Amino acid sequence: MIEQSQRRVPVPVAAVSVILLVATALSASMIIASGASIAIGLIGVLILLALANGLWRGSGRARFWTTVISTASVVYGVVAITTADALGLLQIVGGSAIVGLLLVPAPSRRWFHDLPAEE
Image (cartoon, rainbow, N blue to C red; front, side, top):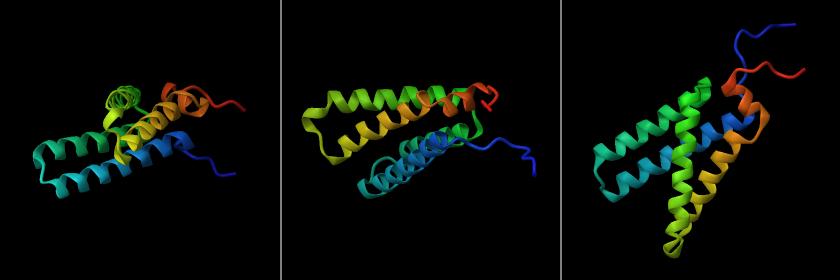
């Protein structure tokens, strides 16, 4: 049997990383299309990429900040529900999925707390 020197990324964490990468691509395309400030948009894109990378590596700080930002995104989406469009609904669903995938599944919690896997 071949031993792996690195732990495998759990599926929930991989899913959140993919969601963040998709959000980065959507944000970048919206910035380019709307002509918004490129500097501010670039900072936002870099933050999302850094969070995805941190989650992939098992950083507890990345988990904390991703949870905080996603929760704030959900709260903002719910508060602004009166003017909701498809993008606002996507924001609420995506943020909720990220928080749920990071905090609920046991493999996700073990990934960030470096607990041994159950045999």
